Length: 105
Image (cartoon, rainbow, N blue to C red):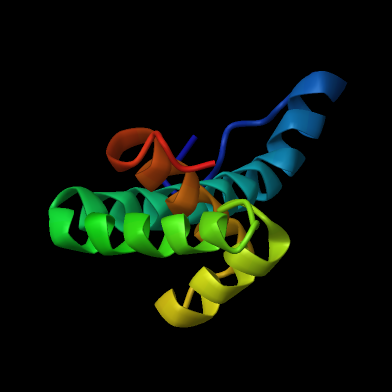
């Protein structure tokens, strides 16, 4: 076998696995991209406690209006302000509440 030839796959299982490998690699990359983005998002708040405190004040304002900080309206407002997707906004809100303002509901 020369360097330019790939080894022959003899079993049906092996052939099926080899044909799925590119799809699996693409899906793995797709899964990790949002995880890395969320990690950077959370790290930005962790490195900037003033931002977290400002968000806590905003969440307390939501509560004073009778809104939960995790309500659809609050998530949407934070998403627009922070230029985030609604899912990332919800992750950010949950993270900030858990670490910086546990009195917020």
